[in-house]
Length: 219
Image 1 (spheres, helix red, strand yellow):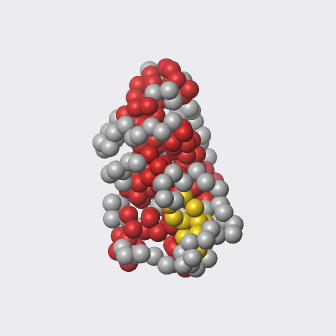
Image 2 (cartoon, one colour; image 1 turned 30 degrees about the vertical axis):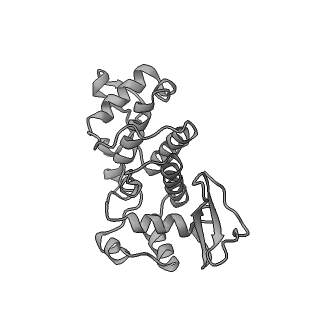
Image 3 (cartoon, rainbow, N blue to C red; image 1 turned 90 degrees about the vertical axis):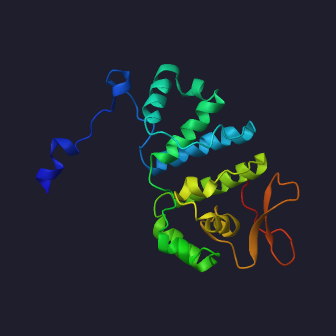
């Protein structure tokens, strides 16, 4: 075991990008779930505050990862953030370069295709999302809020997070029933809903429509 740990292939090394003549740069994509979620969250916050729609729904080409890293190396991330199209491309590629943030199995997707209870939801998330769960669920809430507030039609938020187009019902239930700030389900009978103008969501008692006593933060 000690010999394996000391092998040169397991030692940390600098990241060399072949599209900029092998120069050493800080990698932007594929650096792990925690950094990917933080980057995606920052981009969503920028898109939402500027009320910018998604630039494209096309399937990203993996080779673009290297080209974007080159563009960022040449221009800097601040300059890239001024470009609507490149900002959205960075978001797409960031989520493409990591495993699904909500990695549900086909069996789980089939089992909960018509909805998921709060108890099952808690077990599922604690099993499937052991790392950065609070940040991932914050991103889920932000992504859905962004799509609804901007009035986007046809943006499959669930696919970006799960990599499975059959997870729309599960992801919608997570948005409605999960308390992101407390990292647990809302009490029975409490749901996140949209206000009439769809500009902000709120958490209410389902039967009465009264707002839940402890209102979570809004994205």
